[in-house]
Image (cartoon, rainbow, N blue to C red):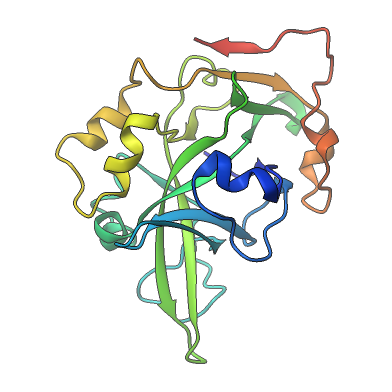
Length: 231
């Protein structure tokens, strides 16, 4: 799954790295939590734009902003068939950029060890997402988003059995296309040779508190320990 991530690009490098200007009010974040506004990239038909959407996808049938059925993740294997995500899978595909994401490894005794996962080359990861716009009871519109997940790769499987769908560069345009290409979902479920190489390392427990948000969260617990890498 994906329940927390970082997007720590400074505003001045945002456009150079992601190809579009940041949305108004953007600032670097190291502890992005559910129910907060997150940056998404989507195709408007006139090109890609970056904007904010609330992380916590609302069902199509609700007009309540805090509906208990909202979801932060959607399974790639089933999202296209589920009533909640079906329409968004057709016309609401987007990207969720991150400089890395967090996963927790369950331990005996109820404690969990947090890990930070990022690209080896430190470039942002582009996670596949679904967004939709709901009209609320007060007449306002709210855009919400869920991050798609898939079975974990060998690097992450010992930490958690699910991971975000990280798109290789050649599939980004296809994912954002007006029509979903045939076979793209199957390709995303099978790790492509050109997917970015990732590394994972244990970090401190400060990330467990969503109120804590600073660069120190992504520092390794033991800097002498090399990160595990998926090549």
